[in-house]
Structure formats: C-alpha cells, structure tokens
Length: 262
Image (cartoon, rainbow, N blue to C red; front, side, top):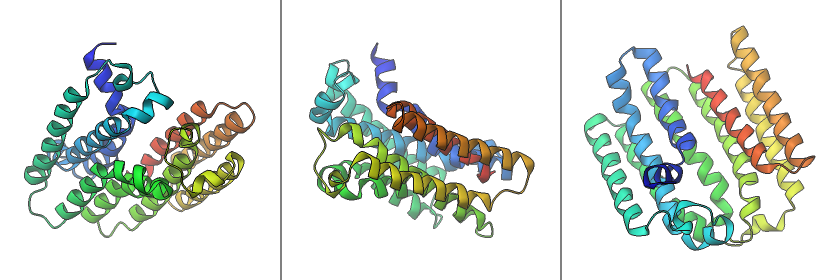
C-alpha cells in the first residue's frame, strides 16, 4: 500500500474532511473570504486527524482481532512513526487555533473540542457505554462553533441537533461488528435488532428536525434523498445483512445534511 496511502487510510479522510467542510463551506458562503474561512476551519481538520491517529494507536491490540487488515496491526505502519505524526497533528491543531482563531472567546470551544477529540480513546476503554453519545456530541461540535459566529441564526442549532441524532444512530450500529474485541458495556445486552430500532428512531428524528429548515425545492428534494438513503440503509442491513454498506449510506446522509448549513 505504501506509507502515504496507509497513513491516509489511518486518518480516515471522509470523517476528517466532514468536520473541516462543515465549518469551511458555511463560513465561505457567508463571508466570501476564503483565507478567513480556512483559518477558522483548519483546527477541526487537524483535531479530527488526531482523533483517528490516537485511536489507531490505542486500539492496536483490539484491531488485531477486529480489523487485522488495517495499517498498524498489519505492520504497514510502525507505531513510533504514527506517534510522531500524531504529535505533529496535535501541534498543528494548537497552532491553528492560536493563530487562526486567536484570543476570541470562541477559541475556548475550539480547545474544548480538541480535548474531547484526543480523549476519545479513554472513553472507548473505560466508558464504552457512553461512546456513541460522546462521538455524536464531539462530531456536531463544529456546527455549534459555527453557530457562535452567527448567533442570530438559530436554525444552525437545529441542524446541530439533527446531526447529533444522525451520528448517534450510526455509532450504535457501527459498534456491532466490533463487539468481540471491544470492552463490554450495557449496550452489549441489547440485540442487534433492538439497536437497529433505536438507531432508526434517531435517524427519523434527524429527518424531522431538518424538515423545519426546508425553505426551497432543492432543500425538500435533498431531504427526500436523505430519507431514501436512511430507508435503504436499514433494508440493506436488516434484509441483506450488509451492515458496512448501510453504514456508508448513513455517512452519506450526514454529508447531505451539510446543505442546511449553507
């Protein structure tokens, strides 16, 4: 695979870019200032990269059971090298907050979300029962930061809440294949179909919340597409057993939800 592609796989571009784009595009649309928008969005890119890198390091033994094909357990990347990359990303995140956001009061939220990002592995290891909620809150944090720049746009909080439901529902499903190697929590007492029910309710709640943001035909069509993807995800999972494909569709729903931030 090669070191660059293996490292890229470790930082999971679809997820790291989601946090970055969810701030960059709304700011750019509102200001038409690319440089200013990048400065405010860049910390989320580096912070997200830190999350996945440190998680890959901490989960090395578990991934040897659940995902032996990944770069670290397969030996494509050395832990020492990945640790150096992690500290580089962490330094970049801190510097981008200091010089990109400065001493503005909003910087506190940037630092708080960075702390949540790099503390993720401790939640996975010692508080696995709250992991889906923790990920949902951390993932929608960038939208909350965006709302601080435009306090009069209360609809941004509605989108953040909808995103929280989408991510929470997806995280519940995402953990099912890894139960064998993950720490045991109360979530393990629920059967997959029970998890699917709760997850489906969360996805539906997200769709309902976003419906209040629909003001154009394009917004309505996008919402219908999101609803269709949600239905397809559960059909593929529950009828055909294709959970990985279903999770991909759920991530697509989250990306489509970015439209309501513009």
